[in-house]
Length: 131
Image (tube, rainbow, N blue to C red):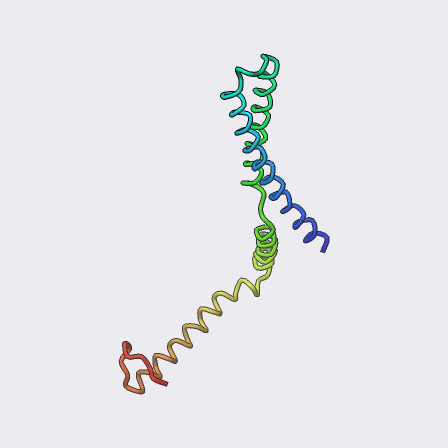
């Protein structure tokens, strides 16, 4: 149970990264507007601070976007955990490896029985049954 708890907590990083890049986009836009349209009204020292803030926001934007892209959501985490353990079990269990072959054989026998039943009734393969 601890594993599931921590896996769902990892998925919260997805929300954190999404918030980081969203806030960074707003900051970059504000800093660029301030730099291009209001730079004449500020002192040189303030303009340099605006540039540094825009660069920092751009870096945070890249980190947030990459983190959001590579961090799975809660649904993805649970899917990975559930399918991963199932696949590991199937790969290690000999009986489970035989199931697909047995299922195909059973399905083939069932479909052959249906086909034989229709042939006995004299129906063509294209005519739908009206049962």
